[in-house]
Amino acid sequence: MTEHIRNFCIIAHIDHGKSTLADRLIQKARIVDERNFQNQILDNMDIERERGITIKTQVVTIPYTAADGRAYELNLVDTPGHVDFSYEVSRAISSCEGALLLVDATQGVQAQTLSNMYLALEHNLEMVPVINKIDMQAADIEGTKKQIEKDLGLDADDALLVSARHGTGIDELFEAIVQRIPPPKGSADAPLSALIFDCHYDTYRGVIVHLRVFDGKIKKGMKISFMSNNSVYEVETVGIFKLGLVESAQLAAGNVGYVIAGIKTVSDVKVGDTVTSSDNPCKEALPGFREIKPVVFSSIYPVDSNDYEELRTSMEKLKLNDASIIYEKDSSVALGFGFRCGFLGLLHLEVIQERLEREFNQSVIFTAPSVRYKVRMRGGEEIMVDNPMEYPDEGRIESAEEPYIRAAIITPTEFLGNMMTLCLEKRGVQSNMTYLDEKRVELIYDMPLSEVLFDFYDRLKSTSRGYASFDYDVSGYKATELAKLDILLNGKSVDALSQLVFKGNAYDRARKVCERLREEIPRQQFKIPIQGAIGSTIIARETINALRKDVLAKCYGGDITRKRKLIEKQKEGKKRMKMIGDVELPQSAFLAVLKTKDD
Image 1 (cartoon, one colour):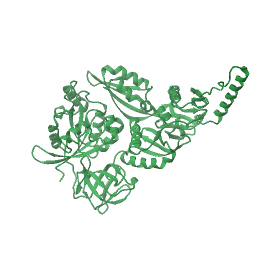
Image 2 (tube, helix red, strand yellow; image 1 turned 45 degrees about the vertical axis):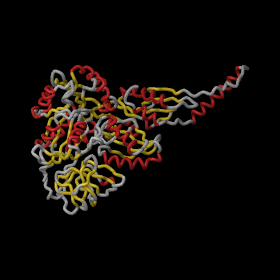
Image 3 (cartoon, helix red, strand yellow; image 1 turned 90 degrees about the vertical axis):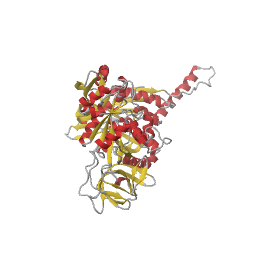
Image 4 (tube, helix red, strand yellow; image 1 turned 180 degrees about the vertical axis):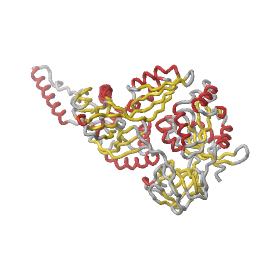
């Protein structure tokens, strides 16, 4: 029977208190004792705790006895709030019947609140509005209720008032989950049909598959099949998530849990695939998730080229746990073999870099991030370019187009001028401006995606004191003036430092890169010129001065011609050294080019 099961997720804008609310629900259900409890208990990655953000969707099964005495099994899915991780949210939503839509009473409805709500409505989820942080001095409960009615179109009278920090209103929230969120549909007697929404790799047990069972049941000893590739495995263990893996007898229709089946071939498992019984398969696969489209591209190389195979294995395991990353083989003259990767945004790139270093002990170098450009050749051919090394000669190009986004910014009216200045600086064109109420305004801008990559989000938050919110959708391609910026070191081009840039920004970008490299590259016995070039035109230059040995130290007085002879001899030696000398680029030099803020 599925009547006693409720599957729900918590969705909200970043920093509205999702993880804190999940903590209170877990504490109230006494899944963990007070001695072992810690804040952000579902965030099990160090990077999540350090940054105070949720990156991975986490599941926990909460037992609850309602006011009428009936026992329920509540499957909570905690989701990220940052715009870069909306793919994680979409996967969480597909395994639920209801959603708690959390709104911060001090901030109100923000851009990602709207975006996540529309995502939930696409999947026909039952929405339960929850107003959080009611204990804060700046809380505006009545104003937030008006925003819920006006902006979200939900009934504000149904909104629950909670303080996740102090645990106020948690009992009422539990009752609302049981009464307002519908039980899952599906029959335990039908053929097995389960959706894989996540996985992770265990060194001893292989791939651990996270799934939601829609029909049928799955238990130990049963033979299961993955519908995308027809690979068959025998189930070793099934269970549920309770801040760890807790073994159970079976998973039936409506349950969310995990399956271990001795899967060592990582590539066999795909997020979004349907699991069924090999003896009695279901008729058709469940609708998976929409194909994710990466927007930021960068190459990853191991610091030591001998670690390439290790990096490849690590990337496979990481792909299993983060289905939104795509990668293919790549190579560079300066850095050897590596991978060209696609990411959902710059924060996603930073998180992947830290996870590779922390979880897999990989020392890696990332090249400067880029977007995917559409280049039309003179012969009429159209090619997609995201790697500067694949950019064709200027003479063969007829025109170029870059991806544009439709950016929605919700800001208090006092910061309106700051937001407009920032968007204009980033080549944004305003398409709409709507006053949501007397205090808030929504701005809609069309702007190039490449301008948002580097420091846009940080500057948006700093110029609005953290009150403005930002969400975007890729809207299409528009014509641009594109140039390939090469960085020359001692007259030789370093392919891994090349970038594709808007011609109008090329000089500033080249100057910043040259300045940062000058600070990072150690001095040699000869002068090192660092140049930024477009084609054969040098547009920026910095010079690292030579280390100079004092050859005149041994001369005590005497004829000036003797001293001149020694200096000329030194000069000739330095010239020879410059011709044959190689400049070693330290790893910090590549990282310096990636810095998003102007120092």
